Length: 378
Ligand SMILES: [Zn+2]
Image 1: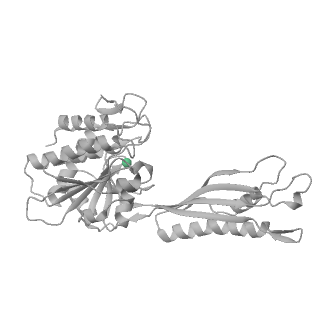
Image 2: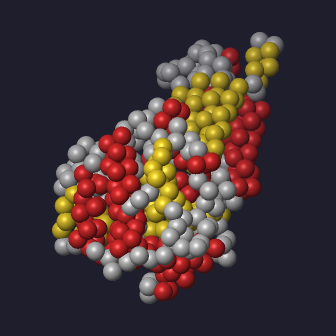
Image 3: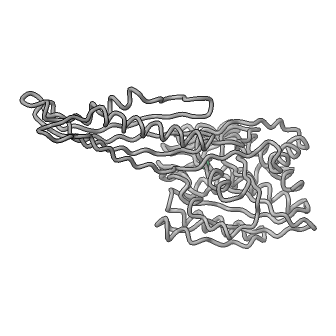
């Protein structure tokens, strides 16, 4: 059913086109032309204006061929992580690698190639299907920027699949949300030898706060970290300023909130403890906290129609589909937050974001098979 040669050629064409985040015009041109050959209507949203990129997110709409009217959405991303440069895909013993010192870009071009091959088979075999919507986002790799700026009014599907995770025969139903913390502590400088009692140390304040903080793995679905600290100016000066960045992640949005609040409270309590009266004035280290939501958590229930459809389709083609807990944010987090029930399917890619990134042809064939069946049964 799957044409392996055609799939390989597609993958080589896709990976040979450079597509760093925000510089996706060349790949967008190719994708447009390719999707139009399937009879899809291709449009772009206005995300480029907000992201300062070359192009917006691509939306392709394929009308259904049967009586079904409930559209199904597939999402992939067109950008690849840096270091970019000219990717030269090579096929060795049935596995694609990058020849040079670049990533391969199987993330996410394996997903795109699999989807295109599935569409080829659907059209070749005249498989009756409902309306299909495809969203190919830009700038996923630099913080889900395309998905965050996507014009969701351009699609009508309420369910779908993101093709964008490592491994095979895996689906991700839950992935954590994350908060980024940027903390600035402003104490009071003084000479550490002559007048230490005239200063309030920002470093001591941070140390006190962090020593009281729950960090690392908080529970089975929550983690937290302080990742970077910068502060002080010289050995003999009580440090006035310190800034640090950290994060909290959780699959549960309430726990994410609680962990974030806990971390902020530790800084405030430390500031309270470090307060002292200097020359008759109460000096309390000033804490400036900046919390930004990096992405919301996603949690699609086991009995959701997209999960059932994936299971039924996998069973029909003899695949054993397992659930894996997601560890990070992906476009699917954002789609779910915008009312589209979406799970993530593995595309066979491995060691993404490294020069050793690879994908086996057999795995891409395997995924394409599943996609054909999903489209047939949707
Ligand atoms: Zn990806």
